[in-house]
Length: 314
Ligand code: UT7
Image (cartoon, rainbow, N blue to C red; front, side, top):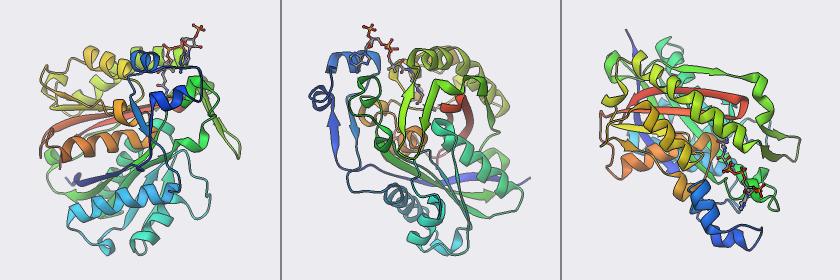
């Protein structure tokens, strides 16, 4: 049976960095509060870079690392909740920038879990023979949604992008594992980004409780569906929302003591749909995760939606 695998990864963050001390000049906050409650030290903020710039930079790096050519890509999927342009969609704009001709190109918005939805959608298309090679991107300009006078949100979010080249392979075991996905729409008002000039607001404690109680069992189910016990994972890349949430889920899941737990939230803040590919790409680039390592990706957030799958590192 045909499967699909991640061939290469790439990521991009805009160069401007905002520290906690920078934010303490804008709102009534301090480094100690932010570090102890969320775990963030810095976040990257786009100044001149558009969402398409961020996505295209990450995609270009993933494509270059894959050794494949632009015309060999026939599917582009971008996960984002911060697209300003409705038409052309972000995926089409990225494809045009990279010289990818005639791809199926579309955006997916499931907020923070978007990358896992996009990866599953690409995997299903490749398995079905509807495409042969895909670029799957998570990209966000969360700074567009921030009220810089609201201390409860402005310290949390950042901008960035991560991308993966995914292609069909004959060996099921080398591939992307089955997705576990779903949502609790009745809790939709826990994270809200609305209007043409949107501002993000969230019920932080409610999302915190939901994430720390509901996600670990779903993450375990995802491992078991992939034929692995969580203790066999080499890595765990959760949505980078909050260090305390990440560590709580990893502890409940029962990862091995030497498993690599992504903690990119410390340097990058919460980049919504970009957070998982960004963190995974950095871990592979630094050699902390190696080719063939089984890694659980698990996204959760606005919706309230979740999705995850076990992948093998490129
Ligand atoms: O990716 C989208 C999904 N979203 C999430 O996963 C978010 C999940 N939730 C969280 O990560 C946490 O709930 C937050 C980081 C958002 C907030 O942490 P918390 O420990 O739940 O704090 P809190 O909202 O209960 O606020 C505690 C106190 C409040 O003051 P009072 O009412 O106790 O006097 C806040 O006004 O902290 C205050 N506060 C701040 N103080 C200093 C809120 N933001 C700040 C701040 N600096 N930046």
